[in-house]
Length: 88
Image 1 (cartoon, one colour):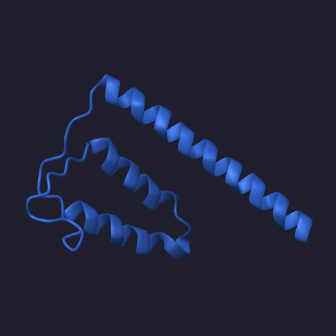
Image 2: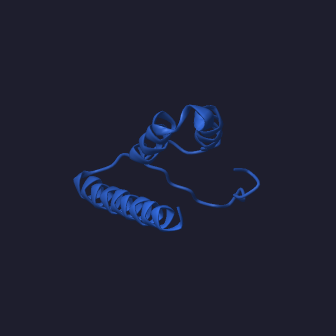
């Protein structure tokens, strides 16, 4: 992270962001889990500021964003599956 961020950059990370990153580690396939875990731990250890708390408004926004991301992933998987069937 130090290669991307300058010392004067003001970076704020919420606790829920870290939790989502850690969920990604748990959801990773066994072949990618250690690599993802290493990356996430590197990100967490490079945080120079305390985690910011999240309020109800932030939690609502995060849940909508998370669902939109999951829906997009489902759509992409469906399209990819249809393309594979067409080619196959």
